[in-house]
Image 1: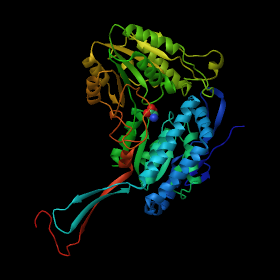
Image 2 (image 1 turned 180 degrees about the vertical axis):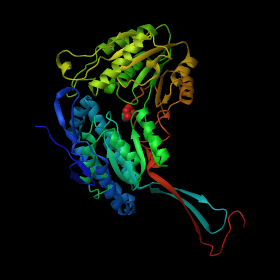
Image 3 (image 1 turned 30 degrees about the vertical axis):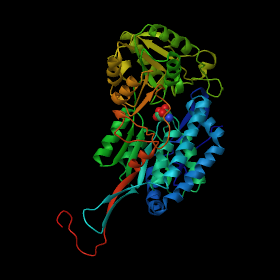
Image 4 (image 1 turned 60 degrees about the horizontal axis):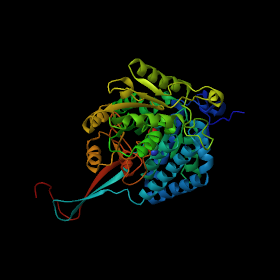
Length: 495
Ligand code: UN1
């Protein structure tokens, strides 16, 4: 029997007023249904917003250390239920169970980090020009935040948005992707089990039209979205028109640069993980290998290809699986289309390049991990995000050319360099046009925490950051308070 899910409106499970539904299945085993979900409408959203408007005054005045206790409890419930939540995640995305466990760990880390932030949420104190006068700038919540999240990290990404929003006193309305709706649902349920007051959070299932309604809603004052450049641009346009705050985490065309003095074994391990982990479906996935031509670069590429052919592809539930399926049939077609056009433009398929549809693989949307050689920087595949297990190899003559090629794309999320030369490593870290840089490590696997901030330059985003303290910038607004305790009129700039 197919399980039926309802929206969580302010803490209460409610049928959608639209009565329309959609079904979601496991991409590794299409016959396995995860459930039927409502396709929510604007009217459902209005209910959630009304509850948030009522809940906001009390929630914003709850001391942040008290709000933090809810995040601590949510972290501890998530720890207790880690295996169950990892299995749900594995089923809805197809990602290997080891990666799913890692993603749930990322939720736990995020809750613990932002719970700690509840004792800080620091402002700034300044020095007045006048005696007996103080200046303090504090952060206050913005109000109701709308969150539109992606299918590739359906647990971690909602937590990156919800935790900083809640700790700083906002109410939240979350729309998980209709392609992976279940992990976000459990996240919000756990927050209520942890003591979140009614009305503070809602979760509505739906598709792009619900996302549009969220960005348009006049009472939602900040919108945070993780998704494609195309959708992000639309949301940003709406927010611009309505003068709303908007945080964008969009695509990437991330590269690993391998210089001729790199440790080749280390670089191969990094590329295998960066390009083919999560079947290349991370915003941070390594989709370009920019390699300096050297005595060993040809052998390096051949060795890499052999290792790619040995990757275990299958249902994520098998502990040895290294690469799962793509999220949907249409996504697999899209990825394959990129490969076919690359070949037309002159690239060669070194390995992969086909659907996998024999035996166990016939049950899901599997695609061969693919390496394309002979790629040049102006081909479509070198410039556009394919969001799949496809690595383009671009050969360059020297370090300067490597930098130029690495930076020569519209995105700027994550760039990496493998070298044992400290000078080149430092120069690359300065010159790379990206929000995240790795030295001798692949482009994926950003951590949560104080110094770590997730986000990109150029068309990857609009300057916002997640997963660290800078995320508070999205969900807070500053207020500067002048206190004059001189008991007389003092005129700034005049006295
Ligand atoms: C994403 O793909 O949207 O840095 C998030 C990483 C992960 C998160 C990726 N921690 O690869």
